[in-house]
Length: 198
Image (cartoon, rainbow, N blue to C red; front, side, top):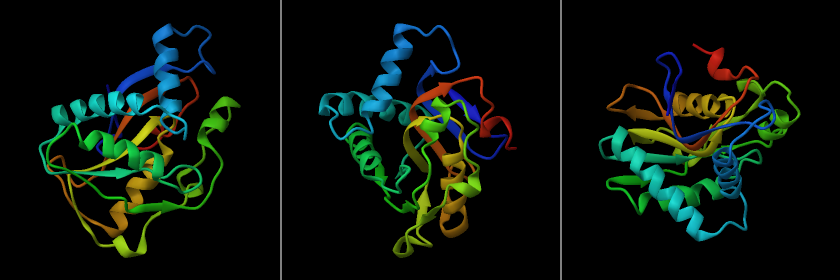
């Protein structure tokens, strides 16, 4: 399940679900996918869930990319990458030619999920201040793929992508860009960044 940013990078998702915030009826599968996405950012998640998700995401990587592949964990709203770093590690054990580049950090910002729950528009790219760590600037990346648990509006992805574009050397078989792989794509009726950015 892919989203296209008009030639500016791709979003791959293992699953999609209809958001209960903007859809009156959601399926049992929607709920399971959503609950799993939430569990991936919890510090109380079960390793079994992490391994199952990692295997599924590694399968998508294998279908879309040829090694070597650089996985880059996306910072959360507090600028921390530890949960997505754990997910990257789980993905790597099920794939080949995968390296992990924990190169991003960010300033704290309002939760995109909370704004979505309140049915408010997402933050703009300029409001999500993400940068490449000073020691990692100018690093060379081959087939760079950002890793996150869920995509809602796409603005966090774009902020990460732009930070990497500004400071890193990209060598990608799929073009000079950075893609995103997520466990879940939250489909909703609130216009998101992927509908506005070309």
